[in-house]
Each structure stands twice: as C-alpha cells, then as structure tokens.
Amino acid sequence: TQLLEQSPQFLSIQEGENLTVYCNSSSVFSSLQWYRQEPGEGPVLLVTVVTGGEVKKLKRLTFQFGDARKDSSLHITAAQPGDTGLYLCAGFFTGGGNKLTFGTGTQLKVEL
Amino acid sequence: DSGVTQTPKHLITATGQRVTLRCSPRSGDLSVYWYQQSLDQGLQFLIQYYNGEERAKGNILERFSAQQFPDLHSELNLSSLELGDSALYFCASSPSLAGPRMETQYFGPGTRLLVL
Image (cartoon, rainbow over all chains, first blue to last red; front, side, top):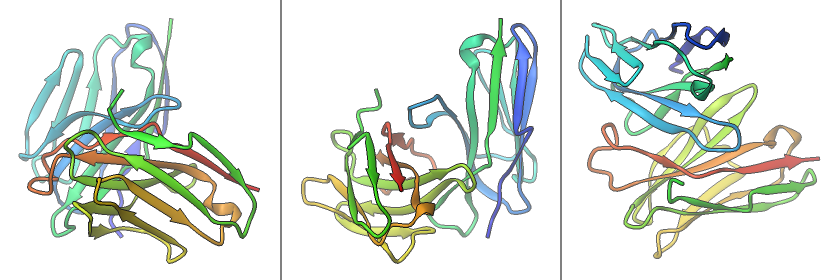
C-alpha cells in the first residue's frame, strides 16, 4: 500500500506568519496535486506538479516537487484567515494507474 | 460551486441497512469517481467510472457497489451497513480518461452518512 504522509497534522498560526506543509512518500509519483478542503465542502484542486524539481506559485502559495518525485511541499507566505482549511496532497503513483492516493492531511487555522 | 451535485446531503440509517448515494457530474464530464473520507482513514479512492464502464478500483468493500448510467449520473450502493461505514462520501468528475493524471477532478459537496 502506498502511503502519503503529511506533516504537520495540525497547524495554528497568527495572521501574517509563514508556514510550510510537507508531503512525503517512499514511492515515486508520476504527478502530485495539492487540494484545499473547507468544512462541509469537497476538496478543491490548487495545483498539479509533474516534473521533479518543479516549483509553481499561486499568489502567496508556493508548491515544490522534490527532485526524486517522492515528496512535495506547500509554503504559504503571510498567511491570512482565509487560508484556513484542510490541505491535502494527492498523487498518482508510477504504476498505480488512475488511482489517486490522498495524503493524511494538514489542518491549518490562521487566527487574527 | 463545482458543478457536481450529490444527494442526499445527510443520511442517517441503522446497521444492516442499504443506502444509495447519487451523483450528477459536471455537464460534459465523462468520468465519475467515488471517495470515502473518515477520521481514521482519511480520503480514500473507491472506484472510477468512465462513460458507463468501470475503469479503476480502489479500496472498495464487496458490500459496496457503484454504477454509471447512460445519462452519466452515478450511484453508489452501500449494503449491510456497519458502524464503521459512517463517513463522508464524495463524488468527483473530470472531462475524460485521456489524462486523469493531469486533469482536474471536481468534487461534489459530499453525502454525510451516519450509521447508528
């Protein structure tokens, strides 16, 4: 069974702080995605990364894909209360077909 | 609003019962995916259908089954329900099977199932 471990599991910070969420696996991804989920709603796709070493930016969010395509990180600069939510990484593993495997999740709370 | 609709929003039932969850994909999307989200297991892929045919299977129990109809809506049937089946069940859709690894899956709002 391929596992995606996220850390930290919970994160509570003040508005304006920076944070990084990590997503790690022992297996290689063919592509990796990051989602944000808010209470009572389904996950919403933020980004897809495909190439090892790839960096993508989405406003204050920076996503990095590890060189070996086994890990990824999400960095948020100057967090805002609107960033509060459950952040999930999800990957298509090499040889795993079309099965999307989700990480364990990071619950972020940004307070004023 | 993702354009994916799921009914019902909430469902409370008893152990041993059978329920059907319904999903309507976004207009034009041919693929439908079902996921289960629970506190202990996280978000897990159950099954995928493309244009009426099963295309990928995940950790779906034998007590669970799904189908996709000619109008592309899908149903997830859960039978002989157990307490541990209590979870959020999400449906997602995407345009086609051509490139699921690069495609966006659009998630519905989910059905919250409580088995008592």
